[in-house]
Amino acid sequence: MIAEELHLKNFRSYESCSISFSEGMNIITGNNAAGKTNLLESLVYLSLTRSHRINDDSQLIHYGTKYAQISCSFKDGIEKKISALIRPDGKTLLIEKQPVKRSSEFVGMLNVVLFAPDDLGVFTDAPRARRRIMNQEITKISPKYLAALTDYQNLLKERNSLLKNSMPDGRMLEVLDAQMIQKSAVIIQARKAFAVGISQYMKPQYMNLSDEDTDCRLKYVSCIDTDESDVKQQLERMYFDSRQRDIENHVTGFGIHREDLIFELDHRGVTEHASQGQKRMMMLAFKMSLLQFIEDASKKKAVFLLDDVLSELDRNRQQKLIELTSGKWQCIITATELPAYLKMNSIKEFRIRDGKIETGGSE
Ligand SMILES: Nc1ncnc2c1ncn2[C@@H]1O[C@H](COP(=O)(O)OP(=O)(O)O)[C@@H](O)[C@H]1O
Ligand SMILES: [Mg+2]
Image (cartoon, rainbow, N blue to C red):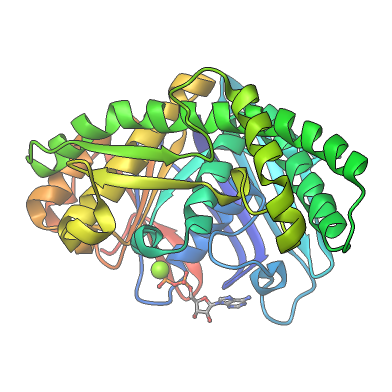
């Protein structure tokens, strides 16, 4: 898909702004705090129906105004237009000006993949952050996954509140367990396909970017052994075996809400063994593999957003990145200045000045 026109009204630092992207490389320049990340954040919001930076939507509304609006038209075989209206008390999502009932109809319609310097934190964060990546990315391509995950989360809440009792109803627990097993099987199968699908691209991507012949992959740490095919039986055994302990501990101590995803470089966890530069290359290889995975799974290309990352790469790597992405995906890159070697005809340049966007750049 290709993002075409983006309109912002009272979103973050923008009172009103319109931008018309090119199909290929776009670069948005501006000083610190000019509003570069805000602009990418608006596209992330349309993709995920949430910001990647904050949980409280009211912070997205321009100071002193009542609501924010993001609208974007894009080409996806046919022309489409989606918008989000953000009020302090909630949001309305619209497809072709019609409000949608469920956000699952909206998530991933405009599919973007963002790479930002903060992403490196994911390596050292708690497992929850890595589960969030899996959930977020799989949700964008699979409404079935989102439905299973939502059901699982509700069942988990119910199970945990049942376990708060000193003598929980055993029959009730059995009923809940049977439902959770069903949902878990869907989730595990999708998470496994995600890790395997991404890993097949990561090694070549990493080698292309770094010139290191190093094995680079994602390891899915599941609550069961995913190399075996009897997923349901394993889950049944696990639920049966843990029931007594859960009753004693008053909480569900295992399951898909405790899983993890490990980034490995040469079969070792990246957190302990990789240099900062290797971590950066690994995250970049992951994001590029994600773009390919999305294309395989949905037959649609996502839009690649790169927030302020050029300055962190040496010149050689910057050029490699541009080479590897240009012509393959629509890219929207932010930077304080446009690097001189990038001043070529095929890049569309925008500059943010005083909260307004000028086409044509710094000259
Ligand atoms: N709700 C808001 N209303 C008005 N301005 C905001 C709002 N939220 C953030 N800002 C402003 O946006 C600026 C930061 O924008 P950002 O896109 O992060 O900058 P950068 O160009 O460095 O990426 C700050 O000056 C901040 O005050
Ligand atoms: Mg920024």
